[in-house]
Length: 62
Image (cartoon, rainbow, N blue to C red; front, side):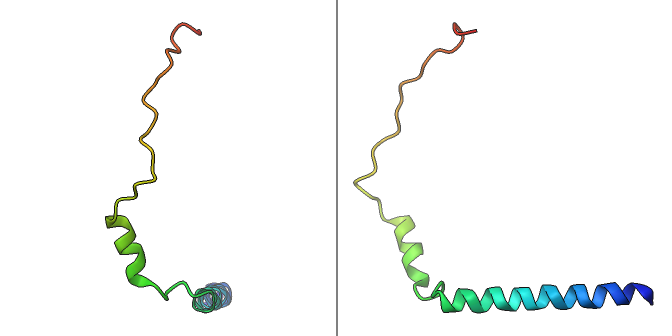
């Protein structure tokens, strides 16, 4: 029963922290555009340059 003296306040603090975090995400409009991110993944962006394929041989540096 002595464990409850610690567990109940810890669980209340975690629950309040989770609730405040959720309310903060609502206030900062995190859930307004749910489809936008999904479509942005599928659309190819033409401005992205291909990765640099030149490599340096570092075996001689040792």
